[in-house]
Length: 229
Image 1 (cartoon, rainbow, N blue to C red):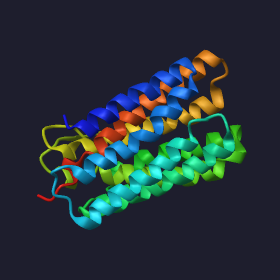
Image 2 (image 1 turned 90 degrees about the vertical axis):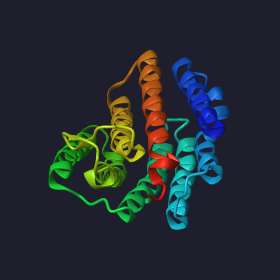
Image 3 (image 1 turned 45 degrees about the vertical axis):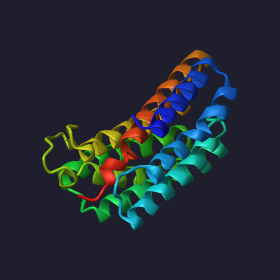
Image 4 (image 1 turned 120 degrees about the horizontal axis):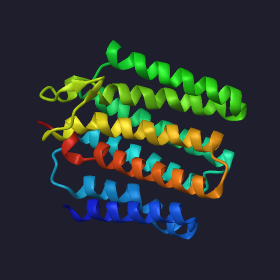
């Protein structure tokens, strides 16, 4: 494994440990390093990525870095909204990247994600109206990127089951799984905000949020998935 990606995994592990133990100092030390380590791997690695796509990818990771820092304190609604705005920029960058590579919306992939988005938006309107508009708007960018990441056109040789490409030897086939993990992570952010009350449960859910997020970005920002073929 290339050193910057190994460093990313280490930073992710420390970040998750910080969430599980409630030690924000660990998160402040490690979480801001996660996306820059992936960006460094992209910038220095051997993958032949077209310059416009490399720029999109690095810009998306830059926006994610801002979001990561803001969400180190996930119980502050103002930081949550600002973080969602940063991640909306990231998701838009990913969506533009995959659109450039030929991905397009397909009905059997779009419909379940629209239903999930509508359900989450309705829940937010009922339980946390102050968050409903900004997080629902972010959800549109998340869903758009996830739909494109799951398009079979990105990985023609992969099986597609229930609207998700099944990972195989082709790194492009793992983009759909990365987007799915990102969706799970963001769904848990909403669940944690609305339903988790005890300190222990909030820490455990935050740890799962960060672990699924870390796995998602590891797959989505794999330079080999964006290399010219």
